[in-house]
Length: 147
Image (cartoon, rainbow, N blue to C red; front, side, top):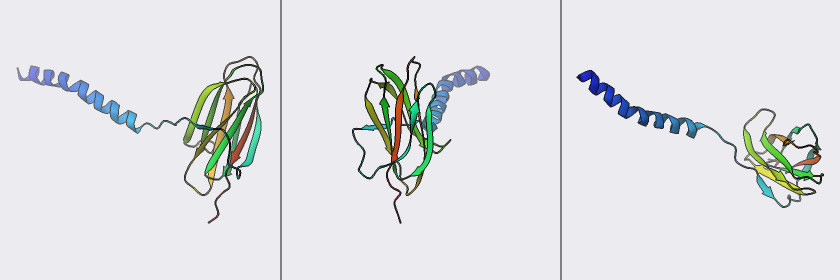
C-alpha cells in the first residue's frame, strides 16, 4: 500500500519538477536582441570596414568605440532577405541579430552599443536564398574614448 502512495505522489510531482527545470534552463539561455535600426549615424562615426555580399557573406572584425553601425544597401532590383549579426569579435557573444527583407535600391543601418572604452567588434552580413544578390556593406564605429 505504501509503495502505491509513493508512486502516485511522484506522478503528481513529476510535471511540477519538469516545469521548474524548464524555467531554470530557459532563463539561463542567452538570446541576442534584434539590432536597432536608425536613419542616420552620428557625425563622429568613422568607417572601419567595407565590402559586398554576393553569393558569399561579408565578415569583418575590428576594434572600435562603444557603438557600431552596419550600413547595408541592396543594389539589385529584387527584394532580398538578409541577416545581420553584430558580436564581440570573431567568436564572441552575440550582441544583436536581425533577419529581414531589404527592398530593392534601399539602404538600412543597424546599430548596437556596449559599455567600454575600446570594443573588439565582429560583424557578419549574409543574404538569404535568392538568385541575384548584390549588397554593399559599410561598417562604422564611434571613436575610442580616451582616458
